[in-house]
Picture (tube, rainbow, N blue to C red):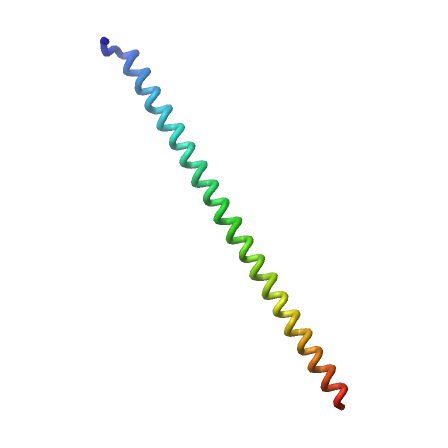
Length: 74
């Protein structure tokens, strides 16, 4: 096999196309992982806020019960 400019061009073209495909694949995997992490953090932050709202309403309702008991005593 003779090494010609055309064969070098073809091999380099294959090499760079393969590297480009690998680079695009890695980029997509990083983007997907980033999206999963953001969605997970968003989910847990909303869950946390829901729990804190429940605690706040529970404390408010207990305060209302205490106020009602004090009114009944008076």
